[in-house]
Image (cartoon, rainbow, N blue to C red; front, top):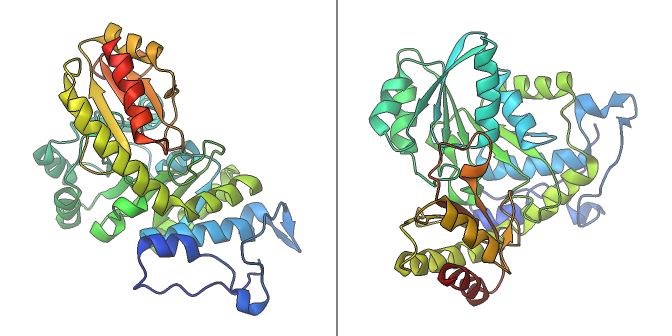
Length: 357
C-alpha cells in the first residue's frame, strides 16, 4: 500500500495535540490537509483486506501514537475482543472483572460453554485477588473503570505482578472508558489495549469500530493476521469518521469530564440517590437509586437525556443496566450516565426534575 508523507509527531507534544496531528498528511508535500476517504477493495495488485487502506492506516497511526504502540482497527469493538481472544490457545484460563462490558462477558461465557476457555471472575477492586491470579492464569483481562459500576482496578499493581509472575500471563486492558487521554496502559506494562471506537473516540454515535494496540511486534502481527483471516475489517466511511472524531477527542472529553464532575457532586447531595459511583475523572457517572422501580421511573421522566444503551457521544445517555440480559448481577437501582456536551445546567435540571418526580 502506498502511503503519503505524514506529519512527524513530536513526542513532547501533549496527547491532545498528537490526537489532532498524528496520521495527518504533510501539507508541505502537496497532500490534502486531511486524510481522504478511500473506499477501495484493492490497491493495485494488493487486496485491502490484507494490507489495509490509507484511511485505516491514518486512523491506526493516530491511535497508536496516543497509546504508545501499533494499532489494528476492526469492524467493531466486539470484533476487536474476538481477535484478541483468538490469540489464546484452547483450554486457556482467563481472569475477568465481575463487572465488565456485557459483550465481552457474553463471548467468554460462550467460549467456556464450548470448553474452549475457563473463565475466572474477580471483583475489579480486589487487588490481592488479581495479584494472586497473575501467577495462576493465562490471561488477565482488565477493565478500569469498569462498565457499568465504574470500579477502578489498581492497574499498576496488577500489571507489575503479572510482569514478575513465573508464568507471565497475557495482559489486556479495555481502555474504552478512560480513553488514551486518561491513561495509557501499555506504558504500565500491559500487552494489549482495546477500545470500542464506537464510544468516546468516534464520539458522535454514528459508527461501529474497534481497535487493538500493542507494543509487541509478535502480537501486532497476530492481530493483523486475525483481521485478515476473519474479514473483520473496518468500513471506509467508519474509519474516516473515527479519525475525524479522534481529532476532537481532547476538547470533547475535557468538557464532558468537567460536566460529569459537577453532576456527580450534585447527585451525591440529592436525597433520592443512595450512592454515586464516579472515579474523579472521565465522562461516565453511575449512581444508585433505592431499587429498580425507582430507577425505571427516573428513566421514564427524563426529557433531555436519552434513555439509550450506548455511550461516549456528544449527547448524554442514561441506562439501567440490570434489566438487560447478562447484566442481572448489576445492582438493580444502578443507572449508568454517559455525559455529553449539553449545557451542564440543562442536564442537571433534567436529572433533578426526574429525581424529584
